[in-house]
Length: 147
Length: 108
Image (cartoon, rainbow over all chains, first blue to last red; front, side, top):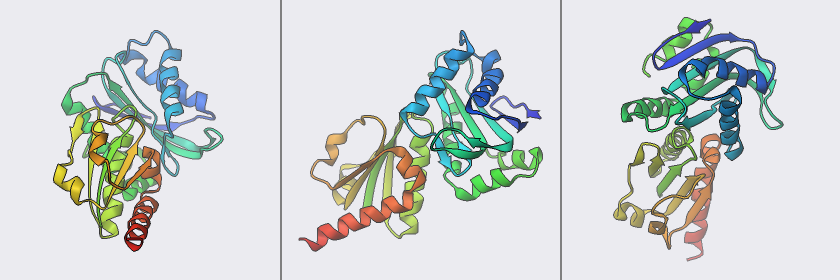
């Protein structure tokens, strides 16, 4: 189930079994809004960021993110997994929620501030728990009303 | 205890702001004063003043990249960690800062 919004999308019931499945899913959802010549190019950028530092921000939650001139617009994707992804890599396991931040290079300040506002909310354990425990799309969506 | 800090990550849109918020919350919960400057994609925000730095007992740098104005902290006690340490273990980091300040005060 997908919820479209000019700024973010909540994609529920994601069935993924591996890190590569997640990258496929991300590529699927950004392809129309980007100038990436191939899926590989986007995935490489995501992997580069991951190599630079841990993308797990809380138990069960990942935050892959990039800034790129190849994105036509900034976008947030909330991937709610149907079943926890048991293994992301040798250090990260049992992932239930993946929040993807795709920032268009030199995007307007207002957009960056909206993303900053969400990031600050993600520092709040109660907010993370609310997102993880949301029973359905509507409840999850309700948690995001302020962003 | 008075803490000043800087948060800065590679992309400058995610960990920078989560680290700032986590450090501020952990320090306040422990009853300390804290101000965290961010150097992110938005630019420098919450820029530390000379006075705030001078009055600080310790500096926490939660950074994954080279920051501008690092020389401002010369002569101060500094803890430097990556942003993910501040994101995942903010309470432990504040506790460590306290230990360093206290051990330094005892040795004076």
